[in-house]
Image (cartoon, rainbow, N blue to C red; front, top):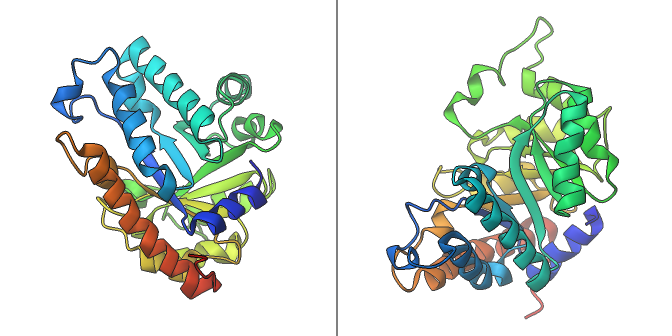
Length: 280
């Protein structure tokens, strides 16, 4: 998917919501555990319930890999179902890969050749040759970790060198030499607030994948005020607050309700900051 196609979906749906499919088999409704593939059954219902309100899905690989072969099969079936039923959705593998060049080539082949995913999250710590293999696929995206939402993000990401440059700023500036805003996005956590201004000084035109709204307490309004650009430039992720909104037979409709609430807030942000008016 191209940047323009993604923005068109945002305009069409008045939403920049990404639903995180962090599906933990110990947290899904108990009545699903008798299914042949309870994780896939849960995901399928969540997808059907939320697809009208979001533009992207982000399965987190750890939740599937933790279940071995069955988990990986549930992941593959989930991706295939989205592709078949909702082909307009942008699909992100939240895998946080990044290794020496030939290993990254295999990761890229797996996600882009094998599964035809739109994007994969990548850790930048090992530098250019660990990221470049992912950028060899047209209309596929690298989403580089830059300034994350977790408490430990300050351990390294905020370190300052002798010139006053923070490490996350160096990651942003250096990575601009590797790819452009048609193939690279950055993870910037919603909990970082006003620091979005600093991010936008370096990468004004790139899309940002923003976790941390919802269960982690990030402010959607603050993210939009400091982070939105002329093509929206944001994919705001919510995982637990949506997919675990309900635990009974109505879990999917509860998830839909939470997704719709966020979508309505996003519609207002798009109106306020981009002048995008609803067509209905």
